[in-house]
Length: 378
Image 1 (cartoon, one colour):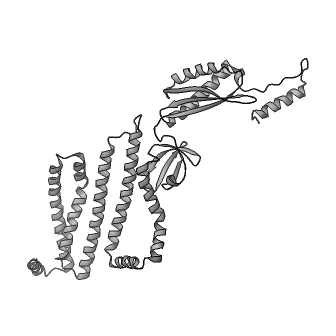
Image 2 (cartoon, one colour):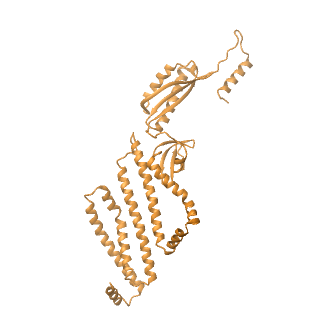
Image 3 (cartoon, one colour):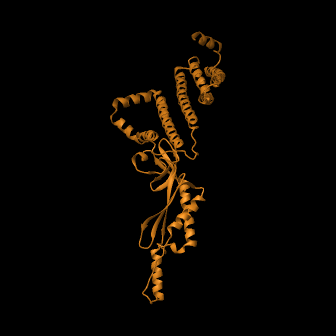
């Protein structure tokens, strides 16, 4: 190596040092690029008979492989180039940082490829997607947690390459005490949500596309990141909730064990309503609706009041959006049926005077006003 350096130095002594350095780095960069091309072709042939993961990994890592070889070649030539000690140290330091970044990106790419291929077997758009939502949720949460940890490790490795930060880290470890306490308090929200994400991936109180009732709002889980969850509200608003919320506060999960839901419709009718007719009409409505899953369609008398009765109608659908639409359809069509066929079955206020005594106009007006107030009319 020393003889090569002396030969290069003697042959190009008439050139300025900076130009010699540029030429040397250009030559090794070109050589590393050519070598990486042949290496990538070799790896592609070796992976041709392997599974999809290795083929995808070789294809996606073509550029990182080329950059890595270039960095290694430049790091070696930095010892040969006519650079002073300070310049050589700066170049090699920058190349070391680049190598750390490439290692983090390559690891992140490998994790992403593996999870993408793993999730191909699960379809979220299927009718019974409970198993798919379980695996998709676990995989995405763990992928984001792994990405966060990789970034933390990468940043820590880069900082440790600086002598000042290394000494600062050593002094922090030596003094621990107040500085460690302040650092722990500062990182508490981040660490809290990271551990909450790991716990969510294992226990799965929520999954992607779950229907939730949270903070008085109904919506579906649209995205789960490493620190927060995006809830898509029924009117297309988005609620952003930290991961730790689902470990500390109660909420309703309507699709915890399955996507099917029971929807209820409450009707307040007169005592004269024929319930058997309502049951018959409900059967016609749900059998003609594509939203019904052919499971439950019940009519129940749930309460008796002074002026009306409470009738609860239960219908089932394959998922939460269909259940909501089916409830609206049943409510609308039953009210239209009663209005046309049994108008007297709708809630009424009965007024009965003494036999042979007719109410005056003022009394009729007062009775009508009382009836309107009882019905909640302005």
